[in-house]
Image 1 (cartoon, one colour):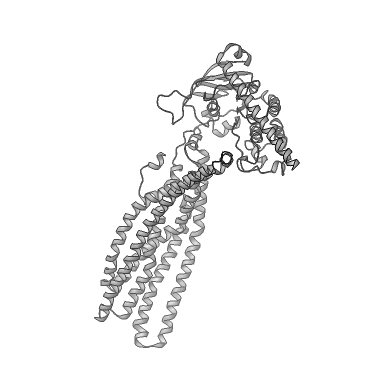
Image 2 (cartoon, rainbow, N blue to C red):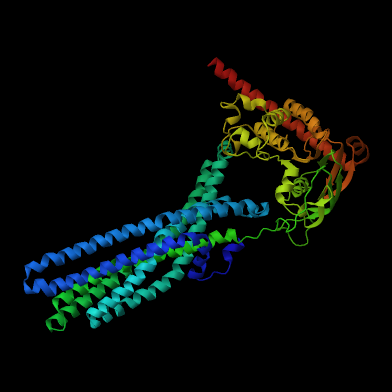
Length: 612
């Protein structure tokens, strides 16, 4: 996607974008840094106490002064431990709050972004950003940034101590460390690219797992489990290769982190022994120098994994802001209009629409739609597959925005209404009925939570969904992820009940009865007639029986409305309409045969079980 190829900025500039989310946590982060820095300084003071102990009481043999000096060292150690504990207490909670705030912001952004965005982005990529990337950012804020800053300051202060003890040994130690900083600079460029590729591959792998889980019935039905496993294994192997590349990069910097200090220690040891033998350095100075260098080993050694964590975090921040920076072309107007008394008068005024990824020069998906629905009228839309029926219905609630012309609701352009108000006036039921992992009640009342029990029962009655009362916990039964615990027909009936319960002035139905058997469909259509008598309705018809619900029918052909009239008049006057209706009748016959076959097969299995 284009965001992945966007120009990359420096690590500091990228991570700095976290500040608005971390602003409230910064006071405690700063206090944590102070506590950690004081702990580092206290640790560096311990060698100075040892220096005084060696050059004083131990050299003079004054045993009376040994215990007080020993007590000072113990006190410094306890103080260091206390400051480390205080640092942890300061930084742990703020990081979790920052993570929670960023996750809420990301979720709100995903809810606000248009359907076209979700058409392009794999769900696994979004999931990995919301979980693993934000978790990495939390750990860096609570741990990585604090120790990176403090350890680098500690190293500088430690070098000052070393130079103060012996400028020759101190300079030697610093010069030997120069290759470490050079390699660290080169490490950033190499590791950042690998880290980003790893995170993207993890998102792709999450998408594959999600698709396999959601499509498990299809994979099992067609015996394609091994094929799915092969595809997954290939992606997992690619991710494994990238992780190995990351490990090699980290191993490379660890080689330098371990080798350089060890070589520095060796050279300083030789120089220190020579200086002490020459009388230029006391034994206490030598002890203090190497004790200080030992204290600096942890800050120096930690730079490697702190840098790798920082570069991982930089990639996570880039990925987070790829979503947050996505522009939403479907927004609320600055000065929105409102409809005080909705009537349901819906007009398509020369509506044009084309998808963003449509090829240049290709005809618009919808090419100048002109259609008017009077308040309380039911209009059916018919057309062959690909004529633009579902696209037309999606424009009514601004799931997509028209690219030309306008859609008017009660004389107001739908783009002049807030999306919240628009979607209270227009409710939709889709062919692909999506339910949420919540109770039946919550699913049906999704569009109008304040509905009464009577409204809920009426909606279920109209949709012929009273089967919910026979579920284990009735209306409080959780239907499971995407409602997969229910049959396709049951999911469609609940989705229809959800649209009816919203009590809109305009009801848009995109073939919501396709999974129903003939008898249930007849009952639903009969009940719907009562609702549609007072509600404006736009119905995408894939069955001839659905057309009979409509007052008028609009024929959609190649993105244009080519005829509008009653069902009987169009049958008598329009060849293409007769062709479409004939195709729908053939399709309905095939569906009935399939349903009967499934019913007979199910009955046969029940008979076999009874006999067994």
